[in-house]
Image 1: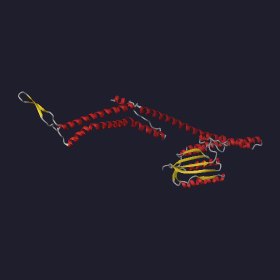
Image 2 (image 1 turned 60 degrees about the horizontal axis):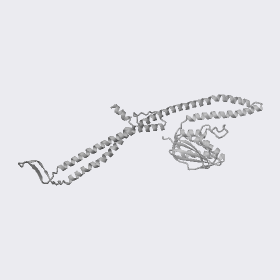
Image 3 (image 1 turned 180 degrees about the vertical axis):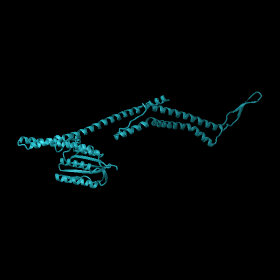
Image 4 (image 1 turned 60 degrees about the vertical axis):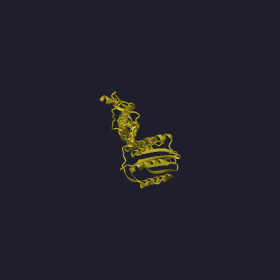
Amino acid sequence: MGKIKNSKQSLSLKKSLILYVSIFVLLALLLSIMTASLCHSAADKIRASYPPSGEKYYLTNEEGKRLGNGTYIGSESPSMSSQDEETVAALELAPVIATPVYSALCIIGAAILFYRNKLKKPLAQLQMAANKISNSDLNFSLKYDSNDELGQLMASFEMMRATLANNFSEMWRQVEERKSLNAAFAHDLRTPLTVLKGYNEMLQTSEAKETREIAATMEKHLSRMETYIASMSTLQRLEDTTPTYERVLLGPFLLSLQESAQILCTQRGKTLHLRESLPTCQLFMDKSFISQVYDNLVANALRYAKTQITLSFTFQDNGLLLTVSDDGAGFDKKSLQKAMEPYFTKETNHAVHFGIGLYICKLLCQQHGGYLKIENTSNGAKVSAFFKGADL
């Protein structure tokens, strides 16, 4: 019995389908034959209940004695009642109708059993696995005792899951090592930097002009190193930060953001435009995340804008989409690809702009369940930041 079961499980889907269909076709044929036989027997029984009429002739022997039961010659078919005629007609029609009906039902039955026995379980497991992987959950395993095509597919899927789990574990290990290394690097550099700054201050008091000039150059590079170390510490904190959600009335909050942008535009001699009216709904959000991203995007736009920047606040998909546009030169091809990478900048003054602003914005948006998108428009550049509201 076990061998039969194993051989059945090892059949390919094509052979299994042919087997199911063949069995049920034979079943439909058997049912059709049985139905025809039963209907013909019932019809003959009804006809037999009406004896034939006419002259009956008998065989006789020499003495004139009748032999046998005789037979009717030129007999007439007896007339049946209308009810029996309808019954006989129905019995004769039944096999004709039953054959296609049995065939259709058996084919449907074969398809249902084929799906239940060969497709339902592996497809459910594959769907479950796909959902878990999409949610970054690799803590499961796939098992299916069959060597057919779906069994092979599930074995490949399980191998992929195991490989992804190993790769994710290695990736997270490397990420944690990088964080620890960056933190240690930033910490260990502070002491020699403090010493160098002390010596630099002493050199700046030198009477020799050349020494003072060298000290001034050293101070610029020391300041750049301090900025770099501070940025590393900032990124370390942000990567470990999670949003703290609270109920936010978007109207007053976004109005305060607009007013702060208006002040900055006035100071820089630029014009501020608001594309749409402010949404007035409520969302569970982290205002500090949104404010930090907003301030960074507005500062970038003011740096590159010629005459104006444009703001847009939109409520969509249970979240807040804010866009900041400027009428500057826009992003070049390389910047469109790498602008959101850490420490990428096209500017030469790295002591002021270290190239982590858009990366920080992207990081904060992603931690808030959203995204950051940069693009060029017909008259400048546009950056869109989306923050997903929490379901509390």
